[in-house]
Length: 598
Image 1: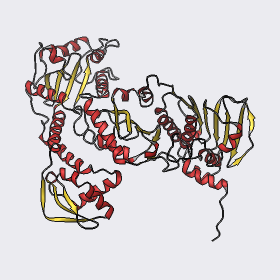
Image 2 (image 1 turned 60 degrees about the horizontal axis):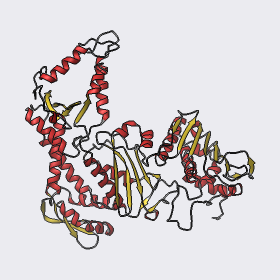
Image 3 (image 1 turned 180 degrees about the vertical axis):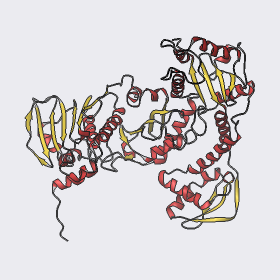
Image 4 (image 1 turned 90 degrees about the vertical axis):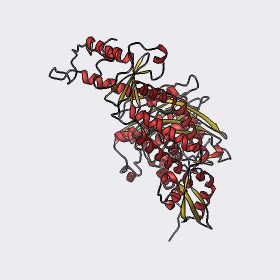
């Protein structure tokens, strides 16, 4: 078979298949170039989901006219020195512009700060035109038209315009979070305009995070900050009672670069292991800063995947920082829970189309007062006197000491439907799910007992020999002391084998071989062996569920108040072991607005 040299155009088109997957990939590359050029304002315009038109304009340093041919040539870059391990810019491979120009119609127009005028170079399906002078402002404009017209097969794999436009929007937002001092605008015929003004005034990122993720996240998040062995971590993570059905709102950055990393995603999941159900995901914005030599960003041409030199260190830093922050933040419920409850009240009180009201609501409503004042006063009287709580426990009297009301969860006033504790603070009403709350308290107590000392083990009548690849056996043996703390006794048994002599008593009858193989896979994936600890924690969670106060049990006032005080003293008690909220807080001001008093 004859071997022949590929043409430069074909080489670029092959490279484009890796670098330019869709219009959002083009936006990512061009915006990163603008940031590397020191831009303080970046404008993105699109049409046809980015397939018809993509235009990125910046006010950066610009490109000199005599360097424009190099800018659209492969493997030419101003961002990389002699050391491939010392990467301090977003771009460095010198592939983006020639790859784009090989599959589209590319116009690159630029002017430097000291230039007398601008210059432009055109590339169409890999064919480069001579540089020509043009009128231009300081900075660079890159215009891409008819993306993939030169590779029509790729067009067949594009999604509809709306989906491509949404992907572009998400790409811009992810990049913008890491650069709060830069203004980003995104506009076009296929989208609602997005304008992210520069926000960095006090050195924090929270305002830009709020622009991208919304006010709900900023109100229901906690800051984290930690450092270990030269790796710095900071950011914001959601409280457990504020979560999502997918992990799309988890943003991770390494030295300012947006990345997708299974290790970081796994660390976030591990940190919330006993605070969220398996089908819910935390919202997080994490920034990692470390020596460029300790992370490889050259894993893939898209530069979205990275490899850490010490993945165990990074994972441990993230898990520890998030768990410490969750413990430190104390008792806190999601603001969205109260908002949803108030909305439900409003919906229940609203007149039906035929003029009638929902069953159970007898108050007369009016446009100026959603609920009748008499009804509101009746509710207040109920809490002042304990009257009107038919069939349930009344707690307290109208006279309450001020110091008791100042406690975060206040004083129990009633038990409703033998499952919900109603408490009163100085300025709010608290509703507690007694089973969910006690479940968390029992679980935390069990965990403390379990992890404060080595766990009991059960001796196997005959050691079980587990055959493993030599590298897996070595990894398992290296973590033997960690496993022993949790009741798993094992040792090397010749080359490529592990002898299991004891298993954790809490696990009962278990498949030792399967357990060891799972642990070996986990260590190979991220150099940690936490799945055994997580299995034991899950058993503790199940025990807590069965050992806690059941729904339907009538509690005395002393029991209810004791539960409230324990919740205030227990980290993470704002959610149960399954991630559900244990209480909802309604501020008095919100209640008064509900009743039309404000």
